[in-house]
Image 1 (spheres, rainbow, N blue to C red):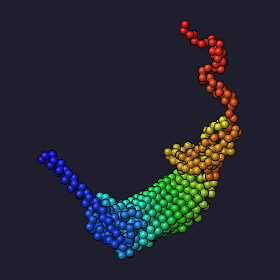
Image 2: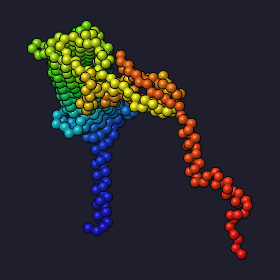
Image 3: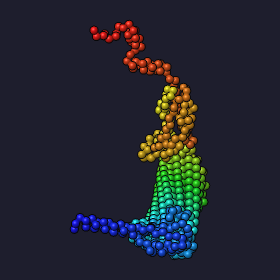
Image 4: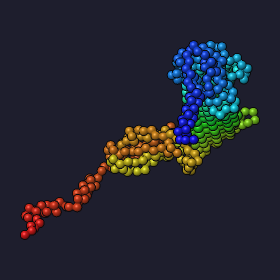
Length: 552
């Protein structure tokens, strides 16, 4: 074969491959008077179906191949698929890979299934797949399933990104979402959804990850915001203003991990914020302003193990256990428990359920301003050593009821590293919480007061940024810098945390004149020529005594 034939063959093959690619990724554009189902049926795998602006009154749409279904603007307000309560809106059939649904409003879907029926908005069937279904920047409103998953039901692998689910209902579980597969939700809002049974916002029975989401104003009997009976991880999210009978925010029956999230303003008779029946881990979060009529305003640990680190429980209310109520095993470290209120045990209430007696380990926490008591233990054991109780000499009769081991406790020490500084000088002020009431030092690696505990530093002379500054602790220490830049004198400095204030005096001396004069003299000498020498040289030059001789 000559060279020309080879080139021609390559060009033909290249053109053939381009034509295949073009066929496999075509765009199909339709309008509101067209059928979405017809477009799907005529499309090839990997095609993109683009919906022009308008409302599409269509239901029972089945996606049977890999494709993208999206609005022309990718704005869900511009394209609405309205099922008019005539059936489910969209179903992704079993075994279908890599379906993308983007920029649509899915509304008024209705699915009349059994108790384990599936979603009225979108049902993702799963099956054997290699790539997930993706729902991106969509809105789900007014969908109702008589079984599970008012808006979305998942049995496969599904990702939901930047979506809003509002006012969806399920007659069974999962007013917003029911998951029996692998589901990842990111940057989404799930609000005002209801289910009479479990999971007003979300019902999870398998694996779910929630990141940067808001789950609010949902309602159900068990788990107003979320009911988890699988493996659930919540990160950087807000779960607020949900209502339930057990677990206003979250009701957990399996494994739940919460990180850097806010659980707030949820209500339930038991476990206003969270009700836990199995394994719960909370790290770096805020549990606040939750209410339980009976037990556990912030948390009710009924059965199982709760491990809590670097978390704030504040302004929660309950009959017993304003901050938390424990009937099994609870460990809380380096956390803040403050301003919680209850009839019994404002901060922590420890008791038993049948023959299981509550065990609490609460160490290196800041426990302050809880009413009527910080901790009440009616049965079981509480180890509450090495906590900060608001002062160096707390009144434990007013803080503790029951069998609670609170000795020793953390105390504050205060020092200035330089007690004498010159005008314009600096002294480092340190509030140290690493020692206990027996004078024993505690290595922060083994536990310390919660980071960012606010300590107020003041001075009456000079400044610490101003006359007063608040800095947070790190590894049990808070520091501020005294600047002696106002006048000479005695600077009375202080450090305050809660009800404890300690003081230290730093003397600010005037700048010595001798030192100033000496400095100027040294500056002149650095030229290497003293004034007297310069004057003599001038005289000699004037007299012509040191001029160079001319050549004869």
